[in-house]
Length: 108
Ligand SMILES: [Zn+2]
Image (cartoon, rainbow, N blue to C red; front, side):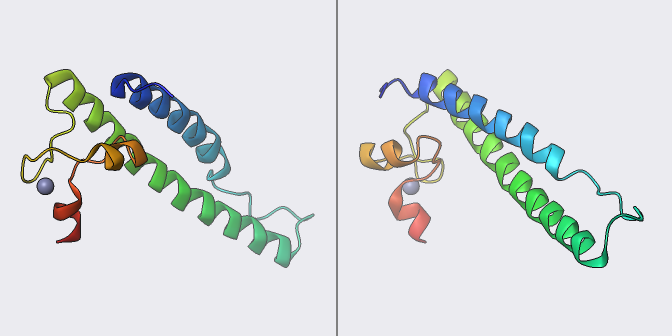
């Protein structure tokens, strides 16, 4: 594993964007009036679409968070808590390289 946060974050951003592209396709509106589709399969399709839409929303949030972390790498503030300015523990950054807050600030 690379310990360069920029590379870690860029790789993560790339895979998140790929996953979002796949998910967005699955979240596209379903054709509801196909004669061949029964009521149950229509409900299945709508449920799957709703799940894909909520996953896409989570991915967009994660992409914003990762992009913001990359901005902090660029401006030299990466690794500092965005709320209190303290250093974020390395173990915490290892678990989630895009985290903007130290453990104490997240608990509040
Ligand atoms: Zn903090």
